[in-house]
Image 1 (tube, one colour):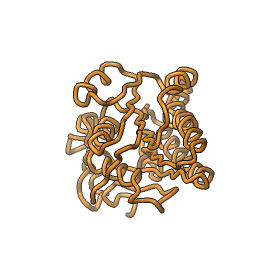
Image 2 (tube, rainbow, N blue to C red; image 1 turned 90 degrees about the vertical axis):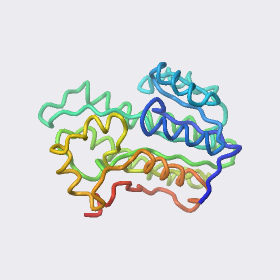
Image 3 (tube, rainbow, N blue to C red; image 1 turned 135 degrees about the horizontal axis):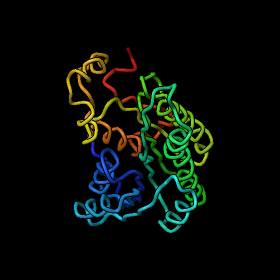
Image 4 (cartoon, helix red, strand yellow; image 1 turned 45 degrees about the horizontal axis):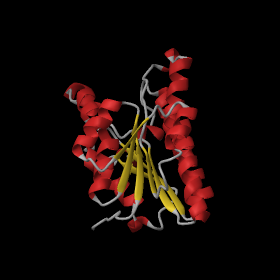
Length: 244
């Protein structure tokens, strides 16, 4: 199934590494004009070395005012991928207010804010659009030391549904992908130890973690016209983890 985004303008947050970076590059390969947002200039510099056509935006999305200023002139956006996130892992009884606030600010508040900016433009133009939020299986399954992270992803799933409800009449579709552990560079560092990974992997019927391409392909499908009647879903990319 061939997917083309020729003539479309896509914005990807958290585009410096991992899923976001791979999504930005894949969208560019599919013909989209891509704006890549991340807070680390060095990551943007290396991304541009891979794909010079990408437009870089360096901003900390947890800063509401700076985000507003950075995105006000990016132009009309047709496709949005809210991928930026952080994970501050603490046992429930040791959760601190600063880590709580930071995690919700990036994982939920920034998604709402960036989506507001983009969706207002989509609504004004009357041309519709597609938004994909990158959530997690942790939105629906408790994980030790992930109290705040799980809470943010649960909130993101419900935000996705409300956005789909309110933006749908303007032909703006909103969906999320909910991956299991993904073998990004960070994922390989954290989960390459068989002793650590065996418990999690034993709960995945396919018997493996997700590769970055597994998630990217799902994002591309949800962004594309191939999913024109798909709105408000939380799509597991987890090898069956949540089904069992």
